[in-house]
Image (cartoon, rainbow, N blue to C red):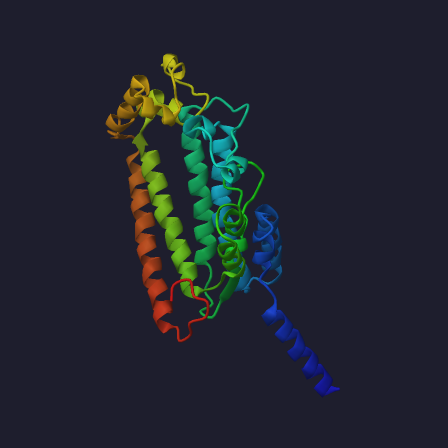
Length: 299
C-alpha cells in the first residue's frame, strides 16, 4: 500500500512538472482578463505558487498594452487616415474606428495615466516573485494580444503566417522560452522604465502641442483651432509637398518645449528609475548564478 501511495504521489508530481503553466493557456488564447482572474483565484488557494504569480505579472504587462490600444481605438487614433492603404494583413488588424469619440488633452492624459497604473500593477506582481528556482515556460510566438483595440488578438505566428515565410511561421510556433527568476526582475525593471517615461509625459504641459497637432493623430479633436481639421492629414501627401501638412509637422517639432507642470511626478519618475536599477542588480545576480542554458530569454 505504501509503495502504491508513493508511486501515485510521484506520478502526480511528474504530471504537474510537465504541465504547461496556467498563464500560457490564456496567453495563447488571447484571453488575458480571464487569465488574470483565474490566476488570482489560484494564488488565493496557493499563495506560495510563484510560477502562477510570474504568469500573472506577464499577463498584466500585456494587459497594459491591450488597454492602451483599446483606448486609442475608442478615441479615434488615425491609422488608415494617416498612412493611407496598408498591406492586406495589416489592414485587417489595424482597422479605423468608424465612429470615434472626440478626444481632448485631458483624455490623452488619462490614457497615459491608466497605462502607467497598469504597468505599476504588473511591476508589483513581478516584484513579489521570490523563488530563485521559478520557471515559466511560454511559447512566445503563440501569445495573442489585442494591441489595437479591435477585439482581434493576434500572435507573432499569425503575423509571420501572413507576411513571412512558412519557415518563419513554423519557427514562431515552436519558439519556447523558459523564463526564470532573473527574467522576472528584467520584466519588472522594464515596467519601471516605461512608468518613468509615463510620469515624465504627465509632469509636463503639452496642452498647446495637443491643440496644434493632435489632429494629425486623432480623427476628432477638441481644439480651439478647428480650421486645422479641414486640411489634408494624410502623411502620404508629403510626397506632393502639401504645405499645410508640412506646417503642421514643423509645428509638432517646434512645440517640443514642454514646461514642467507637476514637478512631483518627476520625483516619481526618478523613483521608478532607481527601482529599475535595483531590479537590474537582482537580475544579474540570478543570471550569473545559473548553471543551465535551457531556452533562455537572456543566456
